[in-house]
Image (cartoon, rainbow, N blue to C red; front, side, top):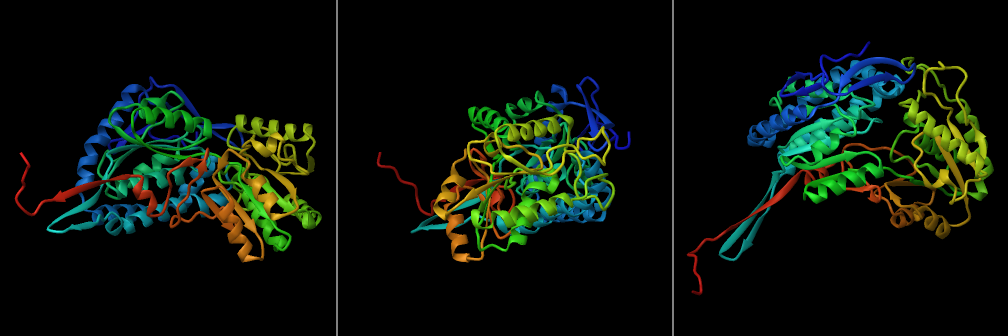
Length: 487
């Protein structure tokens, strides 16, 4: 066991164990090796975590935004100092290559702490409203105890993306990572306490599908922020709505990426590969429906095949490796099942489609896969695969491709590659999605809002907009004269 934490949970500033909880095995996806064993939170652990958060939140909210910001910025500094160790842990947790985690995972979490630490003193201001002789003012106040429920594709980043705005606004958080990737969030909690956060203001508890409902339904929880699948989001949002809790849902997608015939083909291929193969395709915003104009289809597929087959797949701890395994055996079986459906429904397999022959048979590897001649009604064009499977679809004109791109229940993201900047803006205005890119893809700096529309969720992560989802407005009317009544 190379990554065994001191205990399963981090509550009130220290590690806590309760062996009555269901055993959770943390498995290294590259080899299938069990690297840690933890326990899911029992109801007693859930109560302990929420009680600790409720107590700490009052103290934390009394700190000035400037003082809270200093703690978050110090946490960012510590994360950057320990980036290598945190990245190695993220690689063990997820199977993502170290060349990826070292630039994209803890670093993006640190960016989040730094950003929200920096804007806390200025972004939480209210307004003054003149009313003649009287006047009123508003102020943004924290919600209280908030729950974060993370996904397994970016465990450290998500722990920070949810924690940073929640804490900046004066809330306390109880964070539950995915049971598939339980390790990184514990280190984030450690670092926050080291940076000066009051004990209990950020707690981490492990759990499975039985743990989430205990958190969502708890009367002391004011808000739930989930990153996960659409089916899970529907259940969590429904339960939270029944109790009138605040919610943020960052869910799945089947996003379109449109490549017009005037696009720089090499750049567009780079965008399509980033939109399908980064993190072994396990990114919710991926542009998995790649619409390519018929005029450049042949050129696009020829170079795409060459570049895809040159991707280096192997040991994630080797810094030359460009693609690692999927996160679990179950995910690999799911992805292979979709590949089989693509073949059966008549899509043309351009490359990939199987298990690479240069890796451990115990790992959860799948070749980067490209299908061409995909039609809109095919399963692989409609359902979220969450693996390295790219679907290339043909199109003739702008109006047609916009209509087809929007013909989905999802609305998380989308992208356009074209040399015509007027057309680029015209098309993104028509696409029904919350996050869009022009001549690039999947760049999500903390400065910009991230989130979806339609069945892909609501609310926003990152940017100053996220603070609106972790606060509520309090309005105060100030009467300056004598109060009178007509009776």
